[in-house]
Amino acid sequence: MVGVGALPACSREEPAPLDDADTLRMRVWDDAAASAYETSLEAFTGDTGIAVEVEVMVWDDYWKQLPLDVASQSLPDVLWMNTAHLAEAQASGQLLEVGGIAGDAVAQWEEVATDLYRVDGSLWGVPQIWDQSIVVAHQDLVAAADGDASALRFEPGASSDPLRDLARTLTADGDGRHPGDEGFDAAARATFGFGSHPDRTAVLGPFIASVGGTWQDEESEFAFASEQGVTAVQYLADLAAEHLAPAGAETVADQGLCQSLFLEGKLGLLQTGTYDLHALAEGVAGAFSWTVHPPVAGPEGVHPLVHAVAAVGVDPDDDAREAAIGKLLTWLGSVEGQRPLAENRLGVPAHRELLTVWQDTWKAEGVDVSAVGEVPEGIALPETGSRSAAGTGAALPIIAEVFRGETTADEALPRAQEAARSAMG
Image (cartoon, rainbow, N blue to C red; front, top):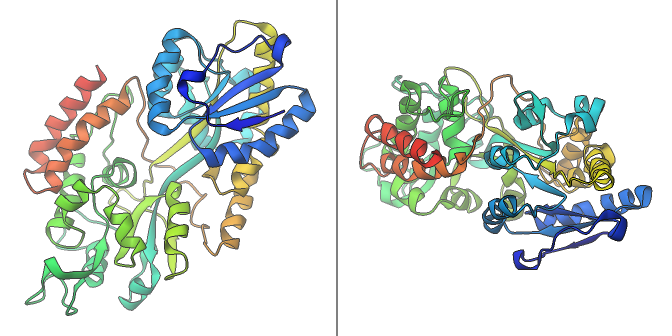
């Protein structure tokens, strides 16, 4: 049988030998995914006789527990992984290389997701879902402003650009005055233009890449304090300073403020990711019309940040158990294995054949996601390398100083980059 439930960290045990229990353990950080997998894994058990217990661990506990399990060599048989923690797990020597296990099936997976799990030419994960940056627009507000949310572009150094023009028109105080109008009261804004805030995934990464910069270089060293990075961050902070976005001090203090304003019908343009589509659909609940678009383009074009969740296998040092883990990983890379994730709209499916299934299920919910799926050649990448998540975590509070108006990007980004490199070690 397949067991799905939340197992606390203190209850874990060493995996039993397969010939004693015929059960594999799989760990994820999402209850909805665990529920979606249940039907799929029942079919897997029916085909193979191998049962799978799925345990759920909340996000923060998940990543606190991972290094402890790596150190004690007590990892589950299969577990979800992200790129920020892959390097540490792979360097421990406990993961299975999955390229040989998957074989020709690799060609059926979205390449942009698969490549995130390649280390030194070898593949260390079976991608399950991937996400990318998007803009969601309050269509009623945008239409009233005669705007086009599908053609947003920013041009640092220019006196204005399509993003600022539309954000200015969307922003209005209680008396209908806009930024630049005589008597405009920023403290009494009834509507806001663009959700500019220091969100690494939704905003900072795509904007920096869209001016030709990068968060990390090819060796995974932090490199965002480049001329391009400074330009992008200062542009974003200036949007708030010019009242075209919510106040920087407020968005720093409340990281969910921009999304909350959008759900309240007060924000015209929100740059987020496909990972937020569920929350947006539930929060809007038909209160107004909203649409999905590519992220804002820059001088170097559109560069959405793409990240992916993969299933990684743990080497059990046991031939029978390794063969069973290989069968489970192969199943998780198949149409049958991933279909429940697509039907439950849990991220963009990694298997290409399921993209239309995912799009159709969203269409049935009244959300057109046809703008998602065609990934441009140039993308912004998520964190990679050992302790890269800690590095970004050290950088963001310093970058937040720019949004609060306490300093400039030119001064803050070198400090933030040094803090990130020090944290990464």
